[in-house]
Figure 1 (cartoon, rainbow, N blue to C red):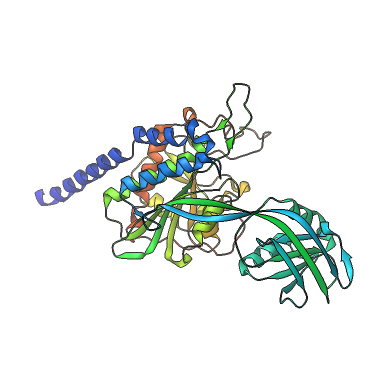
Figure 2 (cartoon, rainbow, N blue to C red):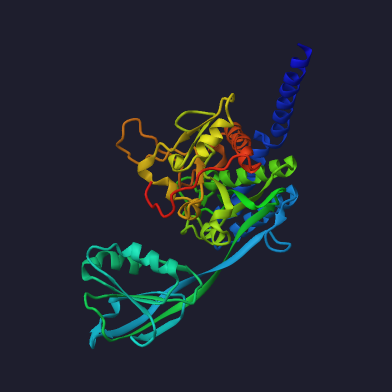
Length: 437
């Protein structure tokens, strides 16, 4: 009997020891410390391309350094890259000898000027009535080839919508020229000019190298940008503090970095990433995702808006795309015996799986999911409506958050991800290329 009791007592004691250790690292006081800094007024709403977001980046980098993470770029935790902002100047051209109105030409290019004819070596692509304009554009951008696209006039509304979009793109040496025309171009001559403004950006990334499986990666991420400064409201407040969106997710990433760095037993390499420019197009996550071979990323935990109680109350959160891989099942299995539950996303109509920073890698087959508690049902007429009333408002401040519940969620992520980090569990892959929720 004594021989049986000793192992049981050891397991109980070690379990309590683990719980005590995690509570020392992930607790409401530490959550509040980090949140208070990230959502403070002096961060100026962490708007992309602002001094405020640079200040936030410096703070996150200092926390990664304090945790003992390896920098992503030499001695720097900054993963730096540039976007290019464009402004239309002029366009003209002909197709089969017929002049094309300048308003019927769109250039998706980061070159200041493009002048081409049918002899320039550009691929020709036609978008007919049965095609989808935006899907054709996405395919061409992914192929990174020079192309002239004639767009059927039935797409005038979509064409005008594309033309009216703000142009912020990754710098590239290929160009896509779209012309609104139903003709097949035997001959053409097109000239397109625009102003170019480089716009530097940076993700904040720290690495905890794995032991036996260094080339297999597990990612914990959140975006640290927000909306910046607006006109003052009736109370005189003008700062979008973004305490929940997404200082909360960034706080979780920082705390998980401290937890795993002190645990020191990760077999797989863990990458901790705070993304920039989520609010203006998800550019930080897109650039970050390009740095990896998808097959080497075993799982991605993207954390967004966990500062408020979910629809199920405390000790609960949902996982977007729960049914698209086995990751949710693994996490829930590892939480057996606890009072915490991960639920499938209850807001399927909002397509949340492809609206956050997990989307780029998810489209490539990575089990990349977002964990959240935010009530995202937008219908104001719905019975018992579930709306995050602070979402993208000036009232998204630290006073609206539940620090105790946030700490519980972060601990649940830490504990439930342990077998994935250890290389004992590997979630099934997402069906690559699936664009629907």
